[in-house]
Image (cartoon, rainbow, N blue to C red; front, side, top):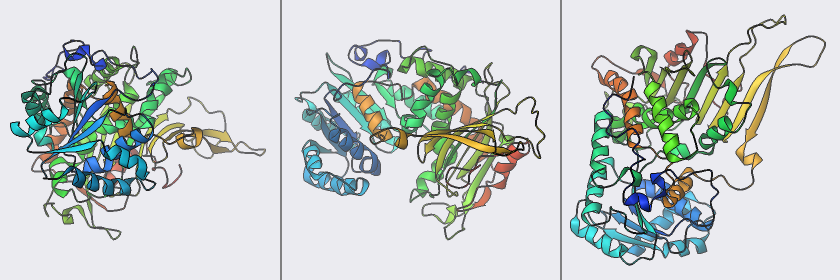
Length: 521
């Protein structure tokens, strides 16, 4: 598989400066290795869809925490834009109720200070008149730039970009940046992602676009680069000479949580594999970047995706949860077709066809209504070429485990001798936990990402060719999953998932690691 599959951008889309690049550090890749100094530049932070769930659960809590931490400039304002007719007071009242649910120890004084900066513009996303009022509200603000966040259904991303341009709000001006943050899902397949990129690039330059995947801002995900490239003890064995295989797992006990109609359209492949799991794969398998900045990181990820072979449907397991353990099945969820063939679970075998990873299988799995909530990456090492001890069973493989959820951290598990006169092996574990090792709270991923946008650092965001390359990997599976003869395997809600997912590894002498909190291995 190569990138000659119709990507809509040039080889180095970060490289072309324009008017926006003069005031936007992301044009050449702001470095994440530079320590932050005080608050982010003052801006008008515009949230389209501020009355929705994403703004209430993630964006406003993140902005509140940045405000409490002193990382939000005193001149920064929040402007909500939505279709519901609300007054400023009604909006802030609703946001206060939602914030109190998300932040149990809410500082009311800090909230009142932040609420005083929130205003609201009511209108349709295609309304020139409404965007004219938005432009008027932003016109005289003493800020360094504007951030536009699309916390809306994907179908209106294009309309928002077009309306911003029509109101004169898209282009950067002298000394003032203009940035558009686009939430996932970014398209529904390779063709729609390419079309959306082309539409957005009519109104915003690549340097102004921030395609978000919050998993990239998880501390363990960010630490992957440091683990590999700042420690001489890890990078030498990060290759097919020492690694037997890699597992990437993202499972959760929740169902579709009232999003049945959304999930009928998305399914597990679009919702998780095309974005989160492939991004984690890239961070694990990419070559060392020249520097830790937006252009270098994204160049290496695109190279990696070009080396990923499209998954074989015969080495892919699709599943759907059915009623069990007191929980309803997927087909009984509101908004779901009672005969639905949509997958709520998938496991697959991928290969990376390059010098470093040739011959190393990558196993990815994700699913809903499973036994635990866990996201982790496991690098399993090859067996020693010769073991001189007489043992009752083969030695267990060494493993490097990178925990993303829960309890972000890293574990190394290997074999050691038990005390006594005989050579009996026991399991030894070296564990690192962020919460136990560092003082202070771990920033929420959205706090990190919102601060990055305000500072113009696009390292943790995706470029146009990167998104399209990810879709090109998943597209053949989407065709297979929707073919008339394809039916997902059923698995019991609250269980371990389809048996075929375990057979995928067991058939070649391997096994999935049980998630943290379920059973030690």
